[in-house]
Length: 310
Length: 258
Image 1 (cartoon, chains in turn purple, cyan):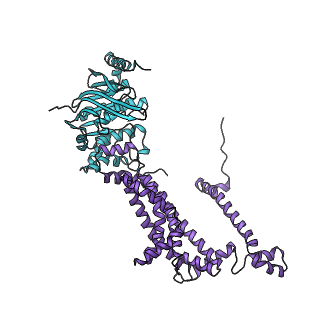
Image 2: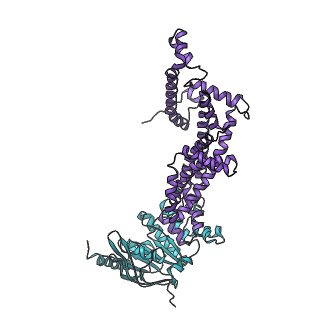
Image 3: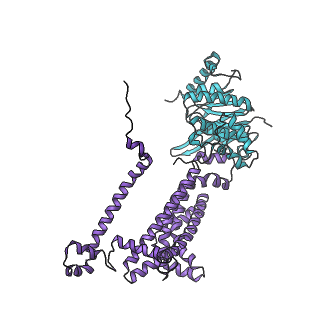
């Protein structure tokens, strides 16, 4: 039997077909896109009953009907629930139109919050690593510290933040450190837990191997435990960085801070500026997603360099 | 002073488990001289691995004496007297082949790392694989890397715990031959744990047959096979005679149970 291969169609010959990688990507994006679309539709629909307190009389006097309902529900100055496009416009205005150093700019506020997020993230990360190393090397530390570490996370951060801020404020530390300490308080925990697990991940054989070399504890740590812990480390960092941002926002609430995403949220709720709240919320979420994404990239690069099959 | 590489006298090792004391080693008396290739063979639970680990100071005997190079096992370990090859390659997956072999050299802060790595990789026929990561190698190649690693700091004693147990027979035959060549070239003393009779007889100058509950030595066979061996030797009467004696020993050790 001779199989005849059909000659490629002229269309295919000119425009190259989408690569398999691209097609694979599209396949992954379709569910995400569907969900996003569904959320937007729900959101737009929800604005109608949510804003009816403000809009029902206006709609009625304009003669009712679908068109009037939508037009009024989606264009309130201070809506109960703003429509997505209103939030996007607010973001556009406060991010791209006003100067970034102006107090009206979200970029300015985001920078304030991000800087204390990052300081707190680094402080918390280092603390987590230090605790994990201590716990792995001394059984007594595990017994004495672990209950406190776990207890620390059962206290609501909103309860402890004002106290911490007041106490640390008296010490004369710069404000950014005071704020960052809340982030650090939140994000040392996942790092500590993840690192303890990671530092203990080398198997008995690998540990015996180091023992046959008469390796010191420091050498075992550097050459075996820390490299083995790296995947665990990155996983906990991704959790940490997101809650570090939450911590920084929370830290701005009790201080009466005038700058930062937290201040912006508080301010918006005082004056019923819902658009401002939503815009701040979205920018914060976007910032958190960006931080997590950056860490994923760093993770991929580091693990690839360490020979992982990604 | 005793010039044996390994000398034990009434060595016992017991440990506590969920259901009572287990006598892993009972009155082990053993001498291994420089340059010997000694196999420890026996069914699982006979203490052959425990004995090897005691020599390596990875287990602590409960009584008796154990000398390695005339020292106690702990001093011998601290003096880095032996290279240990485990049942699995136990390579560090984030290190390339050359860096895995360099691991003991880094820990011991020895010089000429590159030269030692190159020489030992050549010894196990892995020249050209320096830049590969462990997952890019087959199981047999990974175990050869771990042998090169054990030899990297040039210990005179090589302890091997069923190093080829997880490999298929064809690869195992090949590695056995390579191991004999390596032994002939380096003149190391090798203690080799196995549960394969042909492997033990093919490799060893001395075969120690062990039996479980309690773990003890039941036969010690000096092999009269020529030092230079090829795989074909396994069909000769001399080889079969030794293999038969090993098998009889293993049977005797088993007779009172099953």
